[in-house]
Image (tube, rainbow, N blue to C red):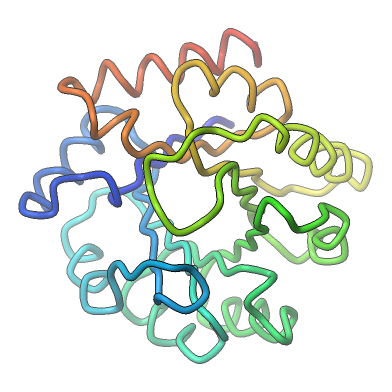
Length: 221
């Protein structure tokens, strides 16, 4: 099932409460929250106190993407703050299975992400333990980057693996998602689309979300 997850990295932070409620009313399914530590990626964004505030006002689930080093150190804190889905990077964890187990222990959904240069086969051993896999279609760290079409075969490979092993795993994409690229990732097999500037960068959020949905469904009927 298609899910749209607007990334608040592109929203007006001075109006954060209003922005989240606006995209929820416009048809968004999740709020995508990018957490960056300035170590795993070359940027710093928001942390646990903001997640806690968002969880108290968001009418839709918080999809928290941890772009941080050694994520196991903070899983409990992000869970307690109100994260609904916690996604961590395979490349950032010394023991990915331990991170998965800890997220499960907190009663949260588990996501795992891979960077563009990480071979897709690296994530296959973990797919049966995940609720969602996130394929980065830009280099993580900054919003507003251009979509990398060479990531499409990676999405297809994951979808084929999931299907052949009868797994129930969402495939999320993040980076350069617009109405145009939504059709490409839909054809490759993704079903959870993160979009930042394509939604928050336009005046009518409902129109932007509807355009992405229509482009997706034009391929995945």
